[in-house]
Every structure is written in structure tokens, then in C-alpha cells.
Image 1: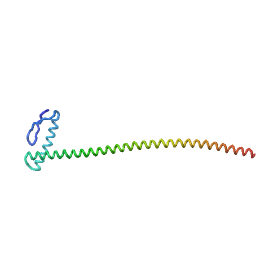
Image 2 (image 1 turned 60 degrees about the vertical axis):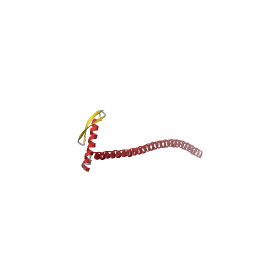
Image 3 (image 1 turned 135 degrees about the vertical axis):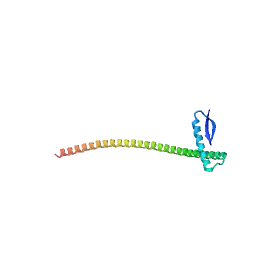
Image 4 (image 1 turned 45 degrees about the horizontal axis):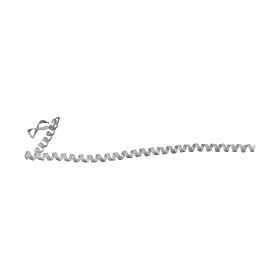
Length: 142
């Protein structure tokens, strides 16, 4: 612990803080003094105790407002995380569906190619038989 001399409401105070936190304590004291002086300017000199109480209430109000905002932000962030996970799952499902569809189409294409090849062979055999029949008919007719 180290001692730090801070100035508040025109008076010096010796406060203790953790080593390395001296500048932060001074900064916080300056901000608190600004709020106190602003209230003093706005409301007049109601007495140090009352002004300190009002200043403390304003600071606590700010803290509660920030906490509420943080909770709202956390809930919103959680909702976004959930939606992101849903979108991610949907995109994975979409990719898997498209991959399965491509595989099925490739199988159908392979089957069609096999059928075409088989039909070509059958057509060729039929043409050969017809050609032979015509040639036999012509041979007999001559």
C-alpha cells in the first residue's frame, strides 16, 4: 500500500491505495470533485454533507445505469450468439444437403451415361441385323 495526497473540495487528503494505482486514484478523485463542484454550482452551497450525499447518489445512479446497460448488452450478445449458432448450423446443413444432392446427381448422370451406352450398343446391333436382313433380301431378290 502507498499513500497518495489527493485534493477534494479545496482540501488535501492522504489516502492509501495499492501500489501502481496512484494515478487511477487521482483521476477518480478529480472526476468526483468535478461532479461535486458542478452540483455546488447548480444547487448552491447546501452544506458539504448534503452535497457529498447527492454526489454519491449521482455516482451510484450512474453505476446502476451502467450495470443495467451491461446486462442488456449481455442479453443481446447472448441472443446474437444463439442466432449466429443457428445460422452456422443452417449453413452446415445447407452445405451437407447440397453435397448430397451433387452426389445424387452424379450417380444419376453415371446411370444415364450407362443407359446411353447400352442403348447405343443395342441400336448398333439392331442396325447390323436390319442391314444383314436387307442384304439377304437383296441377295435373294437378285
